[in-house]
Image 1 (cartoon, protein in one colour):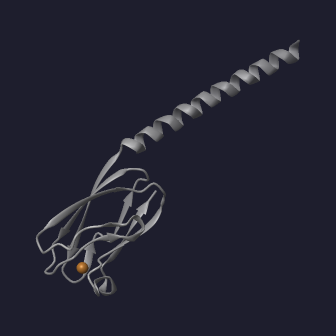
Image 2 (image 1 turned 45 degrees about the vertical axis):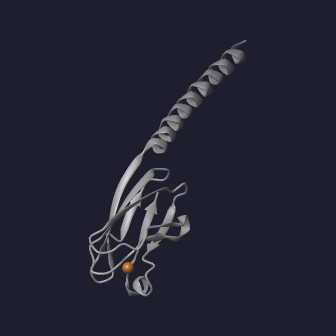
Amino acid sequence: MPRLLIDTAKGRMASIVLALVTMVAGSTGMASQSETVEISITAQQGFQFEPTELEIPVGAEVILVFENAGIMGHNLHIPELEVMTDTITPGKTETVEFTFDEAGTYAFRCEVPGHAEAGMTGKLVVQ
Ligand SMILES: [Cu+2]
């Protein structure tokens, strides 16, 4: 009889802990799904992106505004997502939207011949 009481108490504790874990997991999951993040990357003079590194939450809907503040045409390509802007002329902007479903470090680069080699590269840290 006393043993049965202990088992019941343990069982109740276990179900309370489980309920808490489920609540926490559910709320963070919903937050990342509905999250929208706007970032901007500028192509500068001298074959440089600014910034060259950004942090992005995994699962967020990313709105990337790419601006060309340089003196020649540039684009922005994220090879692993197959996301790429047009090559835009100085003073123009282009917006692309995408989502990273997996954490990791993703490179971006300008695909105009010679530009990445001259320094037009950067990375997005997704976590
Ligand atoms: Cu370029």
